[in-house]
Image 1 (tube, one colour):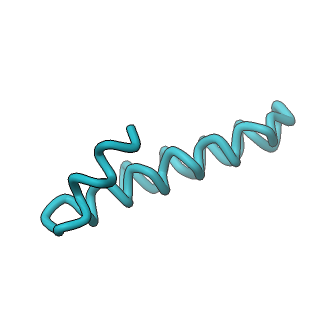
Image 2 (tube, rainbow, N blue to C red):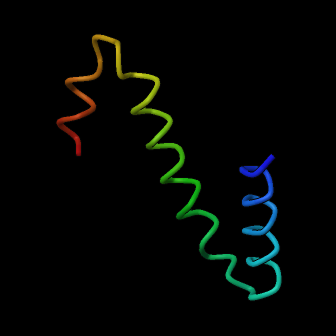
Amino acid sequence: MGKLKILVQFFEFLKVRKKYWLLPVVLVFATIGLLLVVSEGSVVAPFIYTLF
């Protein structure tokens, strides 16, 4: 439940402070992190790690 609360607070922060430009940045970081976690045990992992 704690992780969900953090997300709710983050979206409330974006709404109150009008920092909508932060949303794409967070989504890109989350996508890259998810890509790294999913491809960790696959054959594609060495190619992905060379990109970063």
